[in-house]
Image (cartoon, rainbow, N blue to C red; front, side, top):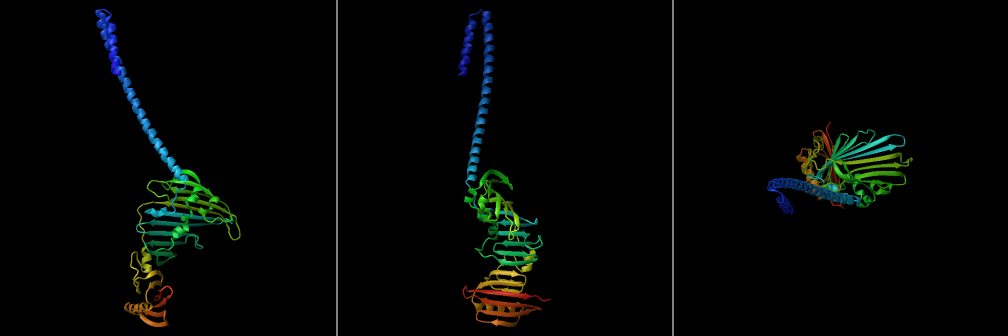
Length: 390
């Protein structure tokens, strides 16, 4: 269209110039050519400017569309947050994490007690390392340490380690003590949604609640005057909706039975899906005569253990386990294996149809062997108590 307009302009200019003298015609043609050139230059500038303007408009449109998409995503996320999206079992989907829970008790007399639980967890292999400090005696630095690798568990009280086997279906200590399953989507729906926030490096939805949402903080009784808390739920791509952080503050009515005036709890989950290895410490394996991944049969130290032993516990010089077997078969096993491992029978304390108590000696050490059958369960319990030589 513009080319036709420019051509028409040239014709008009030429016709106009023919009305003049020859000199003027030549001059007119020159002037017409110059004018046409100027028009063409102006048109090119206009075209270029229009192209730039068009590109700018297109870029702006793209940006607007992206902004609209982002706004839509945010709105969807906001809606999801307000609807209370949360999975109390979501942490089971994480490959690894560290969890820290801090308890603080402020008593009416001004004294303060603190307890800390620190947990490292891996899913493959299933392992957990827990340290609990404070609140377990007069010394606030005293701690309990629990290391579990698959179905084997080592527990330390003070300086002594106890070995035991965790049976399938046993209650989860961490989950029960932390109350993760206390909070439901219904509870979260009743909380005040505060929007998005980033905590512990994870994008989250943040909520606020008070004593009317008592189900989360536990059973609120008549002694509670006020309760306030905040919860952060993961809302990041690639992560399940687990609880990343929570804070609880409770003010109590002080009574003779309950001297605690204020109670605080803070929980944080960090190091999500990072490389982590959990192993029992060497001193635990040496002290209990066990090691991670070892078979549950064979021996603990120089004491024989039957194959297919269950619920085995090693605590210092005491070994206890259960086995599903015939009573006489267990008695015959120890009669042969104790001798093969260098023990000498010192005497029999009790010998009955479903109970045997014997004493054995070796290199100055003495051992008491108890074998008891439970007719109801069909299980045999073996207890071995060793008194080392001085």
